[in-house]
Image (cartoon, rainbow, N blue to C red):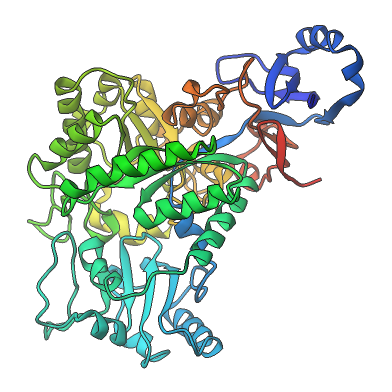
Amino acid sequence: MTTTLFHNGTIWLGAEAEPAESLLVRQGVIAAIGTDEVDRHLETLSSDQDSIEHVDLDGGFLMPSFGDGHAHPIFGGMEAEGPQVRACSSVDEIVAEVRRYAAAHPDEKWITGASYDGSLVAGGLFDARWLDEAVSDRPVVLRAWDYHTVWCNSRALELAGITAETPEPEIGEIPRREDGSPLGTLREWGAVDLIDAVRPPQEESVRLRALERAADYYRRRGVTWVQDAWVEPADVDTYLSASAARRLSIRFNLALYADPRHFAEQLPEMIEARRRVTEQGDPLLSAHTVKFFADGVVENETGALLEPYCSSLHNHGLRVWEGDTLAEAVRAVDAAGFQVHIHAIGDAAVKQALDAIESTIATNAAWDRRPVIAHAQLVAAEDLDRFAELGIIANMQPLWAQLDELMTVLTVPRLGEERAANQYRMASIIDSGGQLSFGSDWPCTSGTPVEGLAIGTSRQNEAGEPDGGWVPEEIVDIERALDAYSRAVAVQGFADLSPAPWGEIRIGASADLIRFDADPRALTPQELARTPVRSTYLGGVAIHSCE
């Protein structure tokens, strides 16, 4: 029988409990906590005692592993494929990298890559002719960091049939030049789908490689459960293939994407996808969630706002689901036993999501539904208390609560200073009695939890600015922040209903743990952001170690 004893360090038992100094794990499950209880348990092991693995924490810190409550793992893993534009700091650098990649891959019919920084150009509007300088005879498609936008060369637009005569798509936008011709930037799914309709899908071997790459990325950062927040049918197949080949190394829950243009036929497909995943019987894989987009993003002016953007008296952004259609769809998936997970960035989108969930609770039979509103970048003052009242989990991205270039170049000018100061009200959600969980939205932004923790607990950028933090009243203390990235994500993921729950250190829980050399509660934000995870354990087995 596998037995592991962790000792000689701080074992964090949660924000409301005193730490312990030792922990015993047997067969992947926490068996004893604290010196006295561990000693009593050890006395019962008799001859098995010689097989105990001793892990000397050497004054370090042991806590439940992190979860990521909102991310896109396959997208993240795919960023290593194609031209490497993520680190490029100018249009010229991106064009040079695309040119280099094209020359090195002369047989590749479509050149695709991700993800470029949309703040490099005013308004985030990138011209196809710039990419034509790198490649003109083959289509080039680059995703922006926000994954709501793509930048294409002229050949890609031509193959997709996007011209001056192309009408504006439903749920999308085609920015144009003065003569009406498409510029080269496509915003939101209705426009991006025009490209995807003619672009060949990636080979399954490439997608499997991307998923494995994503799992490795997370293991090294102490994350053992991930909410894939945008899953389409091909993604379900990839996850099932990886599971069947025993190529999943961490836990994933799939949120099946609901599209208002096709929802009527999607729901039976979602139920079938859930059945396939359930029948697979893999404890590392589940599919009990449906993902809705209520709006886009502020940086594209597609986030849905109650008051218009500063650029226009009439531009309130994009509502993906018009009228009562979101509430109707939410009620339908809830009645089918799915958890609801709604992307809502602007305050109008958050209100619409809250209304949809409130309608569902009032209409459908009661059950343990745990609805999620992701991002909640802007929440109207009158809506803050509704998260607690309706039992809604606010899954927020702490890394975003800083005055970086994305905020200062794209977001604040669109919202204005007064409205911008009401973003990411994490502490307010907690103080009102709401449940806050953390996620990263990787690869849109970093999936490293310690980086998010550093920002969430300081509201300062990596330069330590501004003094005292940006909107300091929304700073989340380190204990509550650690909880939001561990226990709270586990609650979001229904971990407590599994035979060996994870997300907490308690008797009978799965030993999903992470080890730091230093206590994160004693570090400055700058130190915390640079602190590596020494070891990651899934069910008591080390799946990452810096030893």
